[in-house]
Image (cartoon, rainbow, N blue to C red; front, side, top):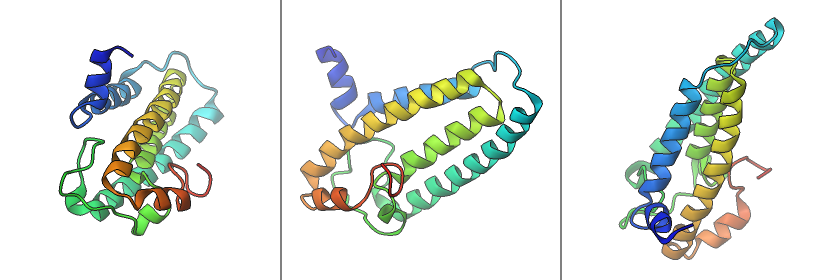
Length: 160
């Protein structure tokens, strides 16, 4: 990555990461479906999509509430922030990101959009990289983060 790209993505508070994430999410919402799914798949996608969307919304909302004053849209932790490791943060280190991914998957499924599913996969890879960058900052700020990271999975409880 060029030095400009590195500064935009990793400098400051990490604004570039937020912008790209929002663009990808918007693309999932706006990309054409490009062809019909078979009726049974469309119905299954609708049900699964609604469930994913609801679960993702609840997970993100509860996570944000548990972060309280530590909540920021940026990946770099707040200067006066504290490390939160209770509640849903005992299940995954990045439950808001997990919730966003569930919402993106749900949106693509509800729309029966194959391109949306591809973009949701791209968003998942991107968010994994964003979380990795955020964890560099978290380890710098909170020495106890390393132990927490060894106990709790990154994005998918008990798996990853």
